[in-house]
Image 1 (cartoon, rainbow, N blue to C red):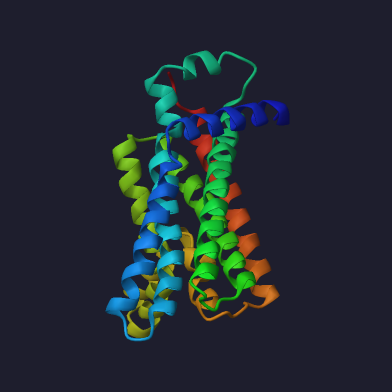
Image 2 (cartoon, rainbow, N blue to C red; image 1 turned 135 degrees about the vertical axis):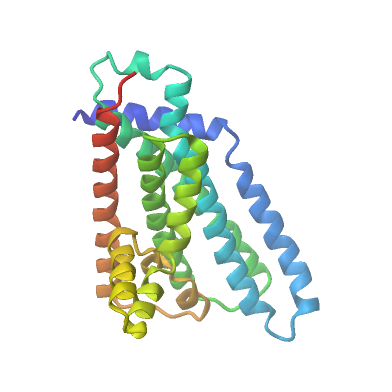
Length: 257
């Protein structure tokens, strides 16, 4: 692999996603937070501060997941449909470099998007004089980025061998199951049924445990997870991303155009 070629693909992918006006999502996010800040005191009973903290973190996570899935599943399919892949592949560019470059490009967009959303979020919290822990919120947003980078890798895996629509549905399935897989594992243990326990264990082992990166509750209450947990979860996310991109590269290398 050549790092220069990967960087060129990543840079071009970053610009392409930005040109798709994907950052309009930030405007929608700011509108949701502004309306929430205005309406929550009228419909809540002294809990509007905690609810607003949840709304901000939840909105960032949900909008980021939508961008990661919808754009991620189309990254490779778009090249195939436009036939630009026929121009890229004969050049001294491996398919693995293309996969990694596309992933880095979209991950860069997600990092910029989350960073801007976080600045807006912290600014509104400060303006509304809501008590919060800046460090807890920043750590939560950092681990949200790891989750979205992992979700982007999932979307690319599905996008290299199936249509964009099916890949999107499968990616959303992984997203929702990934947030309940640990609960399913506990449910299988409680059921004391060998078949149910085997199925839930298999799901937990195959589907990435996205709840590892969900630090919304700790951020809302100003708590900090232990350093060991943070390190283990970051390594888990990094290794899973590498595994998924390897799978995507192997599948894509066997496709004929």
